[in-house]
Image 1 (cartoon, rainbow over the protein chains, first blue to last red):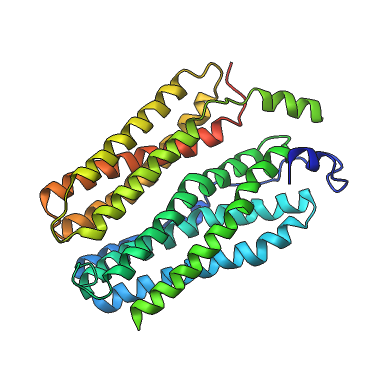
Image 2 (image 1 turned 180 degrees about the vertical axis):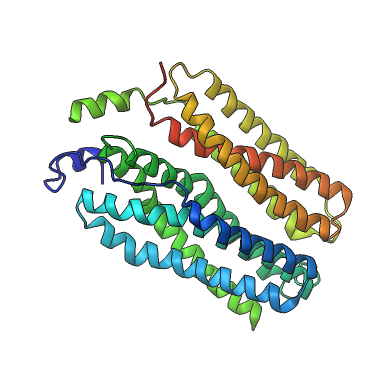
Length: 201
Length: 139
C-alpha cells in the first residue's frame, strides 16, 4: 500500500495518537534470552550431540514456523485491519519479535554449525556437504533480509509509534518491506525444510 | 495533515546510506558462506579477502555519506546505534567463540574475525540510520 493510497483510505480518518506503553525491547524477556544463550554456550562447549540437536531442532523449527505463520497468516490479516488496529497489534507484537527472532536464529545457527562439525558434514568429502552449502546460501539470503531489511524496519516502526502523533504513512511504508520480502522468506523457509529433512534422512 | 507529513518526509535524508551498508552486509555473508563451505579443508583466502575489502570499502563509504548529512537526528542515531552495537558484539562474540573452540586455522580465523568486525558494526549502522532518518533532526 502506498502512502497516497493510505492517505485516501477511509479507515484512517485521522492520524491516531501514540500507542501507549510501546517498548522497543521488552526488558522482562532479557533474562530468558540470557539463560538460552548461556545454555547454548555450554552445549557448544560440551559438544553434546543431544543438546546441539535440541537447540538446532527447537530453534530451527520455531524460526521456520513463526516466519511462515507470520508471513502467510498474520500478515494478510494485519493488512486488512484498520490503521489504528494495525498499530495496536504491532505495538504489542513487534517488541516481542525483537527478542524472539534473534534468539531463535542464534540458537539455530550456533548449534547447527557445531552439529555439522560433530557429524562430519562440514568436511568436503561428506555426501551431505552439498546440502550443507545449500543451507548456508539459504540462511545467507534470509540473514540479509532479516538483518538488513526487516529488523531495521521493525525498530523504526516502534520508534515511530512512540511519537506523540505517529505518521500512518511512514508506518505503512516501513511495513511494505514485510510484504515485499514475505515471498522470498517463505520460499527460503520451505527450501530450509527440504534441505534439513534431506540431511536428517 | 497530509501536507505536514509530506513536509516532514521531504526532510528525510536521501543519501543511500542504508542501501550501501546492506551491500556491505551481502558481501560479508557471501564471504562467510565461501569460507564455511571450505573449512576445515584447504581454502584459497584470496576471494574472501577481496570480499572483505570490498565490504569494508562499502561500509566506509556509507559512514562517509552519513557523516556529511546536513540535518540528521544524531542523538537518536547514537542511542539506537550503541545498543545495537552491544547486541551485535555479543552475537559476533558467540560466532568467534565457536570458531576458536573449533580450532579454525589461524589465517582463516583472522579473516573470519575481520568479517565479524564489519558485521558487528555494519548492522548497527543500518539499524540506527533507518530509525534516525525518520526522526526530527536535532536543532
